[in-house]
Image 1 (cartoon, rainbow, N blue to C red):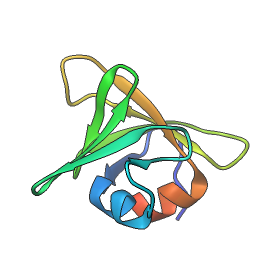
Image 2: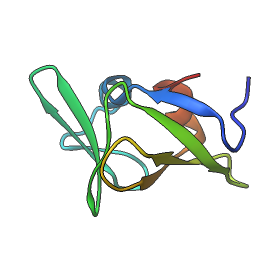
Image 3: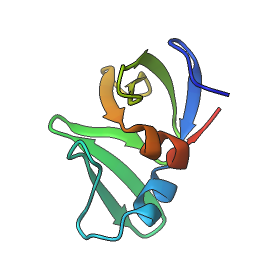
Image 4: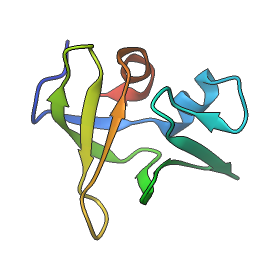
Length: 93
């Protein structure tokens, strides 16, 4: 079922990390993924955008199929975008 604006989605940063063969692991949009022990974090230019297993909300579904997410779990809301293929790999509704 396709994601829609406002939908919650759990993000598996670990699944995304495992799908990327290059190291350091980076998404198509340049977000770096760090892996320390059992922890996987997705970073934006502003810091940690999403930790493995967090539930984020769809801010927008873009014309190219990519999805922009809003993570409200931290002190400040953080936005990040994943491609359609990354969304298919890393999201669980």
